[in-house]
Length: 458
Image (cartoon, rainbow, N blue to C red; front, side, top):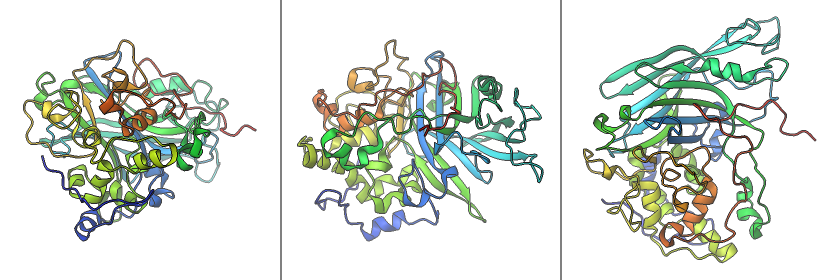
């Protein structure tokens, strides 16, 4: 397969490649805004559309199913009333599946939302008494959602007027939030479950990576920046055969997963957010391309030479060498092309393993390189999961899909330093945040319940 790469050198720490006229033509959109965990400049004022994380994993308690989960609205302060954190009502929230390797969505799970607001001119309260059920009259603001499954063969409505689990406004208003979460789960026709509502922010990391990679001397580590915050979550758990090409998991076990948000601009829907692999737009895309990247469909990734160049010659590797003296493998980094653009397979590059590329699907066509999260659904849940995933020999972990417990910051730092090639971890290269502050749930949707305590309690 051919990657169209601009071979002009990137020079100097923090300097992006020049954008060619042809690449600019590919990147130009009328999206107006784009997002992914606050890294794109234009999304700061539009958090309802900010897609923060995507997870895809074989369900640990139901190994014949796959759980797909995506989050929006970063840094939800639990006490952030009076309006708290609704989904946008004139937008579409999507989780997209590519099962044949052409980088185009073959299956889309799409959520749309509407409000039921009974506050009117009488009160500012979200709830005017203890809320003990989703239909409790004390819950004055409620959202409902429709979930559709869209394929080349047509559109099927899976959930109509499902109730969104509300924002956790506090122990007086919602004394038993777990009951509300349980009531919000919906069974899907043909097996499976669906969810929409507020959750704990399960992505754990020290965001001081942006202060010269943890302070320039690895002293700014060990602080979970997202601890105590909430997010809005949509999720489905479906039989793996519903995602596999031709419904055959044994012949076609690998899927690619991305999430997007479409915003109505007055005349049509436009993509304003995109998230596939974690941290790609944060630390791979340069600042000048971030907004455009989030409006770009995966099938066009390989045509954008400056973005591909950021994978084959990553800035983070040069920063690690310039600041810490950690020398990465020589460029072009074909190992990172496998991890982020093609999936890992013996025929795709230097990582000699057949893991999670759609080229492993026997009925797939020619692979189109594209940045997406890829999952091999035939690999069963790990009996002893490791936070470092594949780098630690746990083949069900990231970058083979992404579980809620995967330490993607440490994994990606080690991968950039060359661990996927050498098989050896760089000692000390970690943000020292190894797990979420809340334990994961043992059943769908697995992500912990949202908190109701203020982040700043001092």
